[in-house]
Length: 299
Image 1 (cartoon, rainbow, N blue to C red):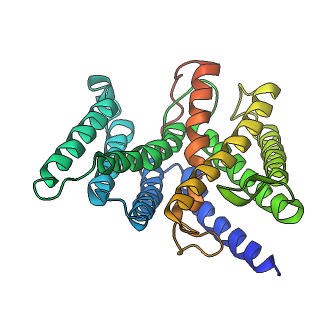
Image 2 (cartoon, one colour):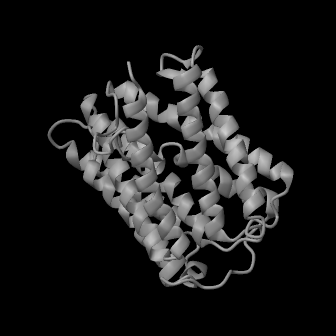
């Protein structure tokens, strides 16, 4: 079977979609950065809930989507529109999650006046909020929050490029050399050879980006570059496997069908849901808290 058309469709779709994302980040349009992440997040979250419904589970789809969008609206308000307001209300994220838990449990009670709704309904809905919009929002945090180790927008580009080039390396190596299955019960096509190819591609991407853009990633040493390359490459594969586990549980092949060669939005962003938070917390643990803000960019 000729796999070349699948490669071309996958590569073409990825190139177009991520070029839009990278263009918005490079232009420094802060509102646009949150907007485009929110759009991808909303579609991916919708696909996640649809998969739960396909396996027969009940979820509060619109309520979960609403909390996801509210999260991005508040992120925009506290990070872009009125950054100083975050000092007056630093626990806004925790407050939102408490509100979500309370509202979802009240919805279970209210909806059980006729037929009893399982607590699983609230749990799956909340999982959709945490798994997609919350984890994906770390890409916005990296791009927007000043730090003392990099230019924020370049750090966000680093995460996207290393993660997606690692994905590409894993796909190509697995397609050409794959012989030994990694976790066949979850994803029969994932192989150890693909994992090795993904790690190699992510490491190479990390080294090249830091070499070319060292001034924007000024505190990255060789050890940081190697650890981040291998770490993001590894977590990208496991992010893909986590999504594969959800698809396997729902007995579906792809999360969606609107992106040629890829599937849905969740298939596109799955690896970043793991790598963006990991990079964010690595920066905090390795280099400490936020530093002086960089030059202001347009909203």
